[in-house]
Length: 182
Image (cartoon, rainbow, N blue to C red; front, side, top):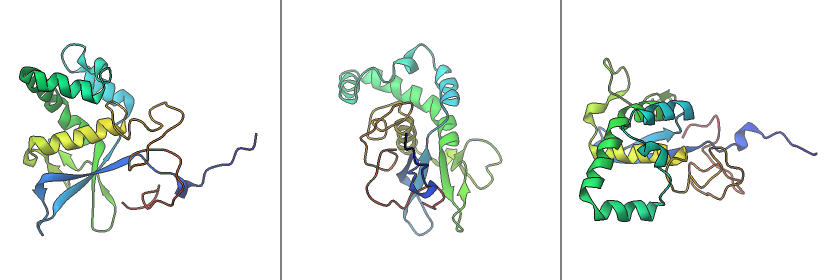
């Protein structure tokens, strides 16, 4: 077997950059947050805190079926949104980062704990922005559909994604490799 060890700068890390709709910088630009996967054991613990067995069924319906089910039942949409809001703070604290001026990471990007340190207090986030980050983190981890979930993680050999967040064979050089500053 002619195995070749991968050069670390060729590795594309599973990240997704989310531009928030309601949080701005001092110059008026939209805030962009780095999102990454949350370890599976931590995610399982977070999802098990939800009532019932819903988290285990998260991936059973494809995105179109879920959207159709929610569109037909406003109470179901509200229930699902309420469940998402229950887990969003912990998932976002574990799966987001911002950058300092020197390029080093501030992790977590948002926190609901006091004192917040360099992290932004989560109370300043609107639900729509919470959902954008939560969906990105769940997609990266393979918990919901999307380009990242169709890639090679978690535990899937192969891969077809070609987007930020997808760990798939690349034919072009990427700037978001291990050790680079996004």
